[in-house]
Image (tube, rainbow, N blue to C red; front, side, top):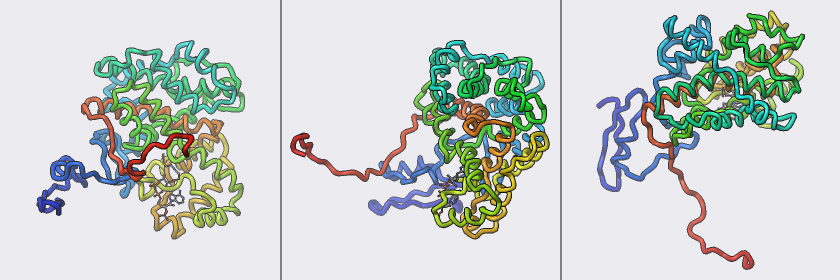
Length: 423
Ligand code: ACO
């Protein structure tokens, strides 16, 4: 075999040849030769934890495809609702399938009144909307106890529809609560993103919430954020899903993972960083401080998988221009452009293959559209829900085993317990 590796156990002299297929090797063979010898791989840098037919990502070539369709084509021609169908079902819908899916999602947008009045309104007045969202998703499981029947395809489908449909309602509800504004009910005559903008901002006079250009731009951002194969939050979804928890509980764990600044919180950090830099003149000093380690990381730069320009960042730059034509330019844009220009000429960033990722420009668009910074990770969670659920469904169909990695124990050896008064 030319494309293979040979592993020899020097303790026994036994060898095994394992084919390299699709760029990797199957650990099943390795396990047969070396039972109980584990592979140390913190952060899963070299471990494929599952097989998946949903999203293809080639970080070196800057390629991202959902179910085989390039992200550029989907962003230019599709809608988030269609993309969510594609991710969940594996194929683009026929017109009849699209209509049925759109109808289902549209008519599951309402949340139980107790969810809003008792649960959401129980938070402290200035609760972070992402904290509210994470908790609210988990709370949904108590409203739909049948969701536990994860082996039933019909029940699974119902929860998938509910989750995709209710995310914008919960997100807007969290925003209205912490900004002290009355809740706006879903309007099922509107399209997905139009409805969300309406629930968020109606009747705030300084926000152009009914403008179709803004609804379209948000829809494009939702397409770009809908899935990204085995990222941190999707892995959380798969790990929790593998214990056969209901989809609301698993989705809430995924949303919790997304909350972190290294993942879905990065767009929030980008805007805070640009605001702190304050002016183009301060960019070189800031870049120097990042390189020296005193300025923290350049937020919105770098990616575990992309070692080239993130293809989503290219599309977002175009979307930003369309949005700024309506809203006026975000004053932080010039600082961002300068930062990108300086970083992309700098040996530190070039040698480490650090390029702008999806979050570098998305925050500027959200800010121009009047979304408060605290809402940024929530805006990421709304579309990523369809990706999480596509992976959850795939995981169950694969009948996969419970996720349970090994560890390298580095703690104390056996010790004798010492009573507290003798310590
Ligand atoms: N700014 C400055 N240096 C960086 C950055 C950055 N943004 N990202 C990585 N580096 C440096 C590291 O210091 C390290 O340098 P070293 O080899 O001299 O020690 C090297 O590049 C490799 O970095 P790692 O941390 O090993 O890369 P990893 O793949 O683990 O991390 C991550 C990827 C978390 C995205 C990282 O690049 C980062 O923190 N970026 C900023 C936060 C961000 O934008 N996150 C959004 C990611 S996209 C998303 O979730 C949608």
